[in-house]
Image (cartoon, rainbow, N blue to C red; front, top):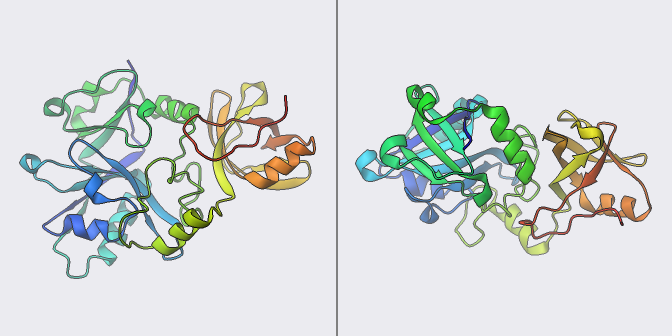
Length: 290
């Protein structure tokens, strides 16, 4: 069954006696819910509540040295390590970019390899259908992965799961817009973290009008990321990543609903699109009347 080398992902390692409290005080997920058997989606936000980095948090068992491994988009790993360093102050932690020596493998449709063979292995914390993820030594990747990143992203896009740097711009999107509230990336019952007040306000007031949703493109071709999504003559959002005629779009849901009610067509990058509601989201997605 498919397993892919995620060559576009890097690893930032955070260790030391204060590692848990240090991270828990600044990122969106609750470190009490992270263990060697359970990872968690999380993010580091601006004080205004926008996503600077999104990542999956692994915890290493004590017999493997302990600490936390942040699975992040590889081009941003050095910046994440640097930004975490800004918050270090007197905390007893060490922060290292390990992207050269460690790699990510993701598999779906099969059981994961045992940890004694692969290293850190967990079920993807966002959605069970995504499968499993593993942090492995870079030289061991061929032992576990036969596919490249394109196969994984087609799988991810097909399930409607967004990824930072591909489906939204860092520094420009709130967690709700990136579906982090739907994918267990924000723990609303934990203590304070950077940007917490804004995110909590959006949750309690239900003010997230912009969301990333899946879309089917006419003709089987998906638009490239960054093109406008239109409803009639109005711009209502932008396209994200796409594969096999399916893509993700970030749109104003209320404007899409108004357009569809008025009989206007939606287009992404000039191509007709039909919005799709994944069965795992709890908000309404506007669809054209049959």
